[in-house]
Length: 615
Ligand SMILES: Cc1cc2nc3c(=O)[nH]c(=O)nc-3n(C[C@H](O)[C@H](O)[C@H](O)COP(=O)(O)OP(=O)(O)OC[C@H]3O[C@@H](n4cnc5c(N)ncnc54)[C@H](O)[C@@H]3O)c2cc1C
Ligand SMILES: NC(=O)c1ccc[n+]([C@@H]2O[C@H](COP(=O)([O-])OP(=O)(O)OC[C@H]3O[C@@H](n4cnc5c(N)ncnc54)[C@H](O)[C@@H]3O)[C@@H](O)[C@H]2O)c1
Image (tube, rainbow, N blue to C red; front, side, top):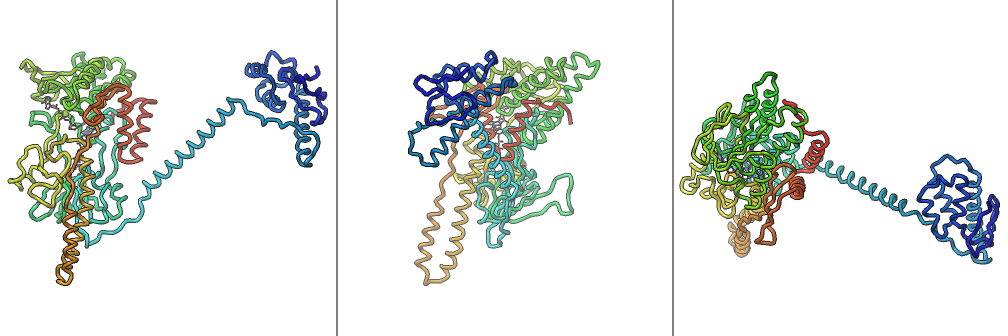
């Protein structure tokens, strides 16, 4: 069948012949070409092409390409297709030749450039965007890991500089070290833990949602990234003498060298040793309960919890004993107890049901709280939301219930009506709050006139320990108007770092001033320097900026009390808050390495579930 052309154009050449482009301007009707190319295979034409056919006209070249691209069937009639291609090639060649010769012959109307179909342009854009994203994120990933791995050369200790001793490697101390300009000081950090622990994700470690190594960062890493060397000593401070300005510390780890205890002097001391878990000397707590304060507590919990489950699975175990072994009691309805109960529930529903189908339904979680409500620091709305979420999750909350004793296989509680009840348990987790460390109590005893608060150290507005001008204290070891939280401790640490930068400037000026004062001819200069020093000493007091409180409550839900528009508060809970919780925690992790590890742990847990093997 001969090719037809659009009305008004010159008749087309027969297929397979060369074409004079000056005589043939028209466009071949889409219908005809498709018909020609498709030939007897009309019924197999792709739908998209059929639709396209109804458009008025298309350039032949595009149509050929389109046809070839869309036709996935083996070509039974290849000849018309090839001939059409030749027509097009010939056309293009003549056009180019005419253009090159600068022909003044009749004008050839410019053929509009072939337009890619929408789906192809979309795919091309998507491909380009994907390529750019992959290259950019790969480059950024490489850049950040390279920076973390290659900290560079550091300055040595300078005998002219003052010695700043930091006790602790937690939120307060690490934030201080991170922000401090170490060029101004010789810094020595002493802590029994040679790493920073991201406590908010500790309950997640307890059930294996994230691994323990993901939420810690070696203190030496932080120290190694400072301008001047920082000496990190893994040891426990055993005595602080504010009068002599010395610290005594010992290596109390299981392996010790010949020298394991020593005393060093300091010019300034930052005291950031945190707190320990409050037990109220309740019998059996230290012996039989698990804590949730340190990394080893979370690891111990994981092992003991799985031990309870495996013991319950022991053949022939009595029904009563199975119920006891599978009863988990969490003491303390503060954020630690709530988050742990929520994580435990997730472990139960997401994983244990798969691997212990006969036992999982019998696992019970009971949360015991002495106060009338859980989470007293959160708004009423969020307390109600948490309680209803726990109810749905079948976590029992016993409020106004006081734990009186913990035995090896039971917990003795005083119920709201005053009766005493003994509950059989497999495992008890104690999250009963904070109390000061012995070292803190000893330090307070040395300053009896100023240090009288039983909650912790008393500091002034600049975090200076009352009664000892060269000591600064921050975080959970202090008794201030603020709650003992990571947020407060890290803001205090950053504030102190800025203070120390100013103190260094003042100290340098004071040294110069002494030299000036020795020479009466430089009295005027000395006067102006004195004014500068007085100005530098006007330190701004510490101001805490509350960024809100977040807590995970299990079942992919979190609660958030956020300061909103100044005085107002936004109290929110649910899945969106949970995603916000995750992104907030991910961004506040210490390093890029931590972020990468935790994100991959979350992904692994989603894909493969939590590990139920017991170490
Ligand atoms: C499970 C859990 C979850 C939490 N979640 C959150 C949260 O989501 N948000 C929030 O704001 N807060 C949270 N907190 C509270 C937060 O962790 C603390 O408020 C914060 O750790 C206090 O910081 P710090 O520097 O005072 O003490 P820590 O971070 O406890 O650091 C104390 C440091 O001192 C060291 N040390 C101890 N004894 C000595 C010694 N004798 N000599 C030298 N060093 C010593 C310790 O090894 C440690 O390195 C959570 C706490 C827990 C337990
Ligand atoms: N997501 C978060 O923001 C988060 C998470 C964990 C901890 N923290 C902070 O860390 C600090 C410590 O938190 P926490 O939850 O470990 O302690 P907490 O002091 O907030 O709560 C401990 C709870 O245990 C209860 N309790 C004590 N003894 C008891 C007994 N014998 N029987 C029954 N109940 C008893 C107390 O009434 C109290 O409510 C708090 O300042 C908290 O805000 C914050």
